Length: 384
Length: 232
Image (tube, rainbow over all chains, first blue to last red; front, side):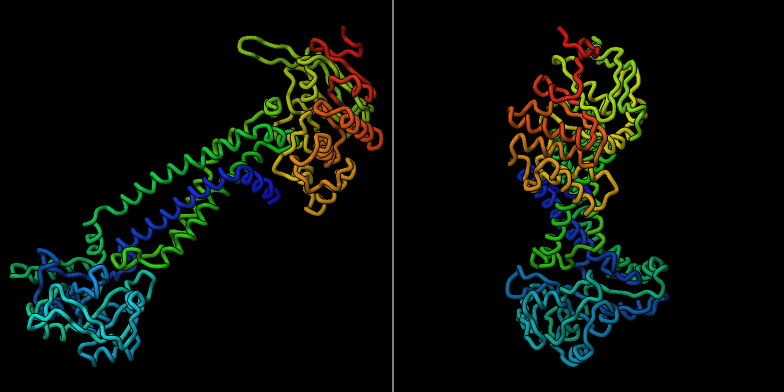
């Protein structure tokens, strides 16, 4: 700490250069934060999905429907604790850009399947007693300023009402919260019985099943048993764990992780060159001063440490401020307006970010620091 | 620092040569020197005669190619780099021709630099800095940055930095070389006072006979050898 003033004073020596380097690092870490949040969004909270849940869809595609009658047959299979279903509604609220997932579900079964959706008991009771009742996740409710008691009109794009009517109206009876930060609170859920009776076509057909298994270690065997049960039927199934299902969904876009690592590597390599150049110039400009410090008794190690500390301080300042800014920006919500329902930076990413900033500082400063530490005093003083 | 029969600095058979490509340049050759404690010694000689090289050897900033250098009864020519740095911090004060102050630090912070290498607390360091600045008469300029000080004032800050740790040995490389006569005289007065009133042993390199006249003894370097006679 004795040398803090000296290190700080050296950083302030060329204010414009230091500021530009600081801003470069800051922007790189803002980008890092966004990349992490986007990756988290594409993983859709894979880290928090229930290990004991299976997703069962039509073998051909998730777009193909399955018979509602499969639910009872699945529940009879060994290893299945419970099953329920959901269907993609795909409606539009006010305008197409207001995207969020809407699904008809069986309230009690669905909420039992997703205990991470926290709904007050009285709101659950209201949902069960209101056929047109619906609940929305906190994020969607806040996004559109909905409150319990509001009437929500949704324009159908797939499921018309009997008589060809396009508008479905729902009474918002509850708003659920997520048990964890990564829990999806953008869903809009309404009653399947109301939906099934009122839809013009497809009665008795559902989108996909959600199955809870007794033993997560036997999830693969149970998935095989489900697929075997419906093999050679008109609607064969494809069962997989929820984690595999979500990862497969993300992979349709591409290997997000590899893309992120590629982009970030390029960015950080460039920033390393910028910061390294700054430190190299900073040291080259004051070789004489470094010689003076050594002449009055600073050891090679102390000089090395001071240059590295200067480099790390600059990188950490840029990194930490960048992380704070991106944390704030991301806390404002999904910038796509709903396409990324889970959009946040996991806390662990901040630790990684700070470690990356420190690493950047060390790498950028190591060669100039070695140059400074190896400088011979008499040579340095002869430079004036 | 302990003395050795009243001798603070003793150089025996010192050679210092440099290589420039294939050429070997002998700067100092078989040089012997003794400097008694408390002496104000002046080294003179033409440019390139090895004055600064000798000063660097006495101050542990450089090592001889052959021979030994003892300061305070301790050989410094064979110390490790780390030990030598630590020794310099405790026992040597350096004054440079171009002051060599750090422009980003105030006068007080510049003076504090060598004290950072000591175990002194912040308040003790502050006290030492105040003492050093008062000795050179710059208490009022403590918070000024080098760029706002005159050449004479900057050199006085340089001297305050050199004496901040209360070293026995002060090595001054042309301390008045960049100053006008008046400022130069003030610096010489200060060095003289440090020698006579504070007991510092001072080795000063200069080209200026006027400055040399203030020293207790003048030695001339000529072709790598020391002499008390003015070389022809």
